[in-house]
Length: 137
Image (tube, rainbow, N blue to C red; front, side):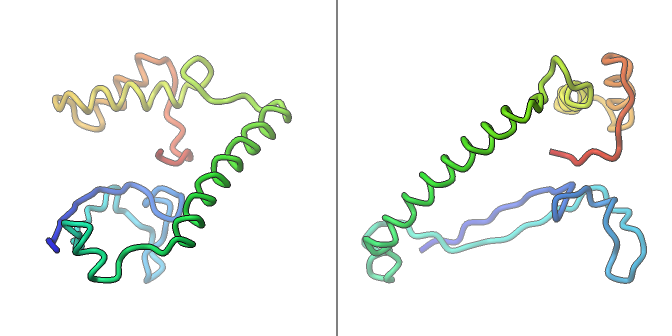
């Protein structure tokens, strides 16, 4: 086995922006981005996995595949329910917040703008104000 390391950055937790949460002491959370890192052990060969009894049983493989099929069917049914209810799918042509986030991400990817500058330019370009109540995607 070998050890693999990973890092990441999160702007939301529990489905909401970090700044909408509270600290354990009850005070408002002022953290906008939270970095994390970790590590895990990874098998290098099938033989190593079998020897460590990490190979799934046949019934586990069947359960895994059925879960994939069920999740696909659930997503299809949920999309059909949204469509039948007449709810419009958000896209670039009908959602100014999505437009703002797209322009913002493009500006930030260039690495030449601060977050505040990118937000201001995106707002001016789209002709809309930021709705800070929306969750980050």
